[in-house]
Image (cartoon, rainbow, N blue to C red; front, side, top):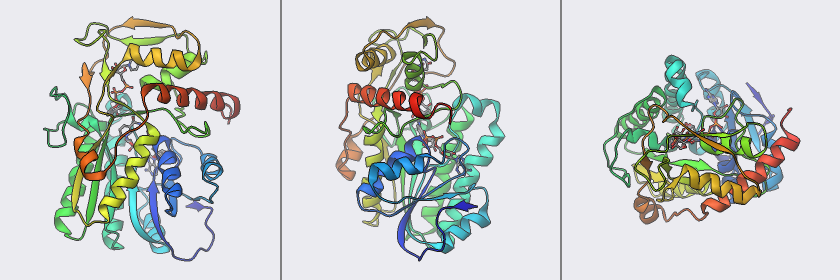
Length: 349
Ligand code: NAD
Ligand code: UFG
């Protein structure tokens, strides 16, 4: 275990697993800005240590970081020994759908294993407030839009199953421990970046998700966007998704933590905008943001994709008092700003 902590006194604070990742770094900023003390934990398998300094630069606050693999249960116990956590936000996990089909056991071992170790530590050290990053993928091929939290679930790939299994594990923990409060947050499609341009998504390989792919085309690293299908029953024939600015998504975690403090038991919320955009509408927004044409070609539908997916966001609005603020243009503007910073400063890091 590596850490920049040294010998620190026990403090009340939030543990953020996956804290150096794309969403985690934005949640870290929102936690710090809302007065929480935060400890980031990550094994850096899909992120970089340098993000810790950039989070500190944005927040003007020191950031504590522990490099640890969550599958190391003893190491995780040592972290819980060191702190008196008020709550845990659990984002650490592998997230590539296609890769999960090729390497299912790695995904089950890592994602489910990490959740079990975290839940064991929470029980052992009496940490009763847990926020978990789930996904709209748990709704499977359900075509009843908008998707509500009480809709049927079911998955079509191992990644999705790791989310649904983790949800179930946490649900059972909540049943067995009446003092436990758990928020299952089902993210829709987070894109964009912090307005500072200092943090954002930096996929190591060729991205499989639309927005980072579009950004690589916009910055000349890839020749054109492959638009997967133009014969769906949608506004322009291309797939429709509920894109949400990652900063809005990150803010939702603060509302969820507040909710847990009301001793609410287990709760589930969609975090989306409740509005769908087509692939072509997304490309157009990025063209406006970067002021250049983004070439694309229509190709075959991608296996496993559904035509339309968007959230009902009523429950989060009513019970969390949370609602996304930023529109697709702001997502594209901030994403483009980040992409330029990344290419200039981090590309060869
Ligand atoms: P990310 O890959 O940028 O961040 C995940 C972080 O977890 C990475 O920094 C990685 O190094 C770390 N990690 C993985 N396994 C670990 C382990 N065993 N121990 C410690 N650290 C580990 O991904 P993200 O987009 O920030 O996603 C965060 C969470 O949100 C993930 O659980 C993901 O499944 C979920 N989610 C993401 C999306 C999306 O579109 N980005 C959508 C729905 C849900
Ligand atoms: N798309 C393209 N070309 C690309 C990539 C995507 O046309 O190069 C299209 C897809 O067909 C889809 C839309 O863009 O219509 C969005 O695709 P993404 O891969 O960006 O996102 P998905 O909705 O397929 O899935 C993402 C995450 C899942 C998560 C889900 C809901 O990858 O893990 O959002 O949160 F479950």
